[in-house]
Length: 294
Image (tube, rainbow, N blue to C red; front, side):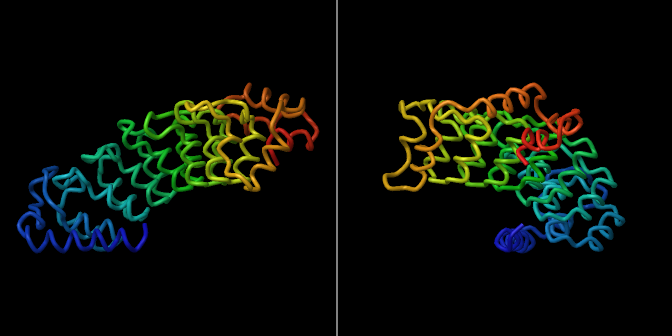
């Protein structure tokens, strides 16, 4: 979590304490009720483990929520504090509770990019998928370039192929934000290089952003240079004149060679999250490396 987010939360908590002192100092005998910002929330967002533990031992409910249904676990994940997350989970914090914006603690952990928080939540039964399409954890992690979070969510069951109408696929989000490493991770996990947003493919987005590394990566993983978007344009037709990316398309447009076709067919047979099994095949090491893009 960056300094700006912390400062915003701090100002909110100070304003709440100034205007709602009775609501902030929640009654420990009244658990799970809608309140405003509490001391638990404040300790969680700032990672104050000792204070958080003390408040819990005093009887404060770990599932106390604000008027916007934000729990202390939401805030600990947003702040990227795995020790606080672990403590809250130990005392019964609900892992799948959404706030009014449908954001779950897992979603918030993907905002902060803390894979330790993500893994703790998944270990305690959190769903790797969003409550609804408005807030998809794997799309958020892909958008921000948190490859480790993407991999953990995928291994827990989140689909790397999930396409949401207003966002597209996780790969499309990674390409839109030029997160090359995350795009590669998604492709390695089995994402299709041709599933984007409606008719706009990841390769269209890579061309639009003039990112040569993304263009080469997507074509390596089977990105089709001939597919047309809703405007009837191929990816190469979206590149600005005199842009170096034009040279990439001039060199690589056209049918794939036989080696690439064979590699893509073999990888497709393994499916999502099974590509690690290719290393177990009785093949020469150089061939395994080729199949694994190493």
